[in-house]
Image 1 (spheres, helix red, strand yellow):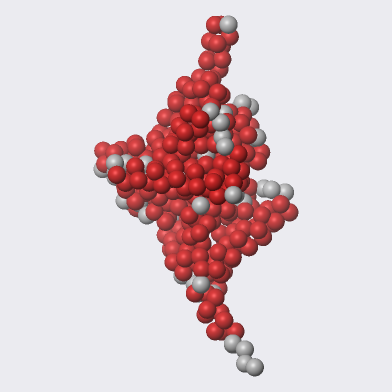
Image 2: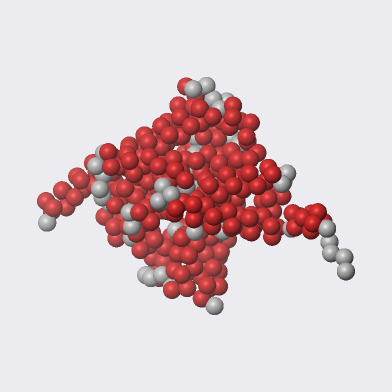
Length: 242
Length: 122
């Protein structure tokens, strides 16, 4: 009775998509536990913890990103239907949205303009690389849209995806603080601002902390800012010759 | 069975969105167009089918997990991040704070005015 040596089992496992899909789920479960032990602080956001653990795992096992992604793509794929599903909370809140139509339109335009101008302006002043500036421009938009925009304007899509996540986490850390400081209490406005500045992370935060109304408005902001940025940013970049 | 129907509705809308995005070469990604298609469909129908609600809300509950695979992609940019760490950090923090502040202030002002106008109408 000869069993396979561990090395061979490992080679087999590492080549199949199962391992990295499993690793991603386990990392997220562990990260969520740690986050709960830490009292749910956004500083130890489950997503950031999972990413850190998985990067460490890939470095330790000398696995490259394409190999990892071959397994993890099954989760990544679900971002598409999840984006479509945002129509459900939006539909639930349609009356409220209709009542706040003008604030919503004005908030979207002002928010998108601020997000893009501040990201490009600050990074240019601080002397960032050309490609970095262009990768930062769409960072407030949800990642499937942001990656598409980055590709169109000459940024690095995979870098943008990471910056989008960091923006989301940073938004969850400083957002509630900004809202408290400026005494914004309306759940619709809280949710909308969080969704505009921190896309899906803001939306998830709003659903769990501020309730369903804030969550729905946050999802609305995420969709609208994605739409507006996708239309406006590519021609703007051409216009300013960035 | 209901989850399958729910998932089929979501994927169907996404598919339509992708086709429209490609056919008209729109700058907007397919899933976002799919979201608009589903929203219009729900408004026409007037209610959310239970199968769609359970599938959709299940997905949204774990939305953050779905970002992890793309985030691990940062591993390919370790050099760039080390080089421009402070630029990135300062830009992300300041930009998020300013964006939140401007958005909430604009909405607060307008919502207040709208609220008062409605009270005067009544």
